[in-house]
Amino acid sequence: LAELLVEYPHQCLWQSIAVYRSDPTKQQLRFTRCRNVYEIAKRKDRSGQLKTLIAQYEYAAAAFVKVAEDAYPAGVHSTFSQKYPYIANFFKTGLMDASVKISSSNDERTVCSRPLVVVPLRDMIEHALPVIIPNSLSQYPVGDPSASVHKFGSHSDDSASSSSSFTNIYIHSIDEEFIVMKSMVRPKKITLVASDGKRYSLMCKAKDELRKDGRLMEINRIVNALLHQNADARRRQLSVRTYNVVPLQS
Image (cartoon, rainbow, N blue to C red):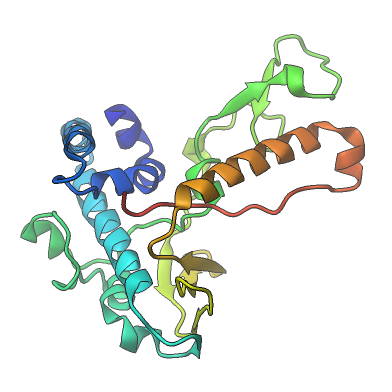
């Protein structure tokens, strides 16, 4: 686990930050084991960047949770940076506000450079990793017996490509306009401005059971993979729309 964290820090941090931020008084075993893995990874990291990345991801997760839990009237608003300066300024300058509680040391909090936190898209978190599925699921004719696997979720047959050529897309800033939904938990729909110049929607939900959403998306992705194996489904471009689910605290 520590080696994966060193090799794929952005992907692993998004998927494990909820465990890292767990309450030690309620989940002591999970908290201790996760912290031990992170400490081993820090010692293995020769670049010295992992320590800073952990602090940045921990702060981003805590700040997003704080935004989600804030009670705000439903409707469309256009003053995000004024209402939530602790997260808006963080992505612009790297400044970590003292109002956001994290476990990182003061030295790690004072790093004032634009953070390297990737947009939590499924492509950023999953497709950057070398995940494969057996070719036996495919309806494509197999000409080369040695080509027994291909990338999950990818339309490319180039099995030699790897995550080393995968370009990370980082959160650059947050758009001023955001929407507070009218549902019971009042989730907030915000727009991330990314380093590739594009905008990505993000829903911040508080006090919700995200494991059910995550499991549903896993099933939908399996359905999409199987649909892609079917010639008629490919021709009709059949798919189930999916979204990524990232728990920020357990």
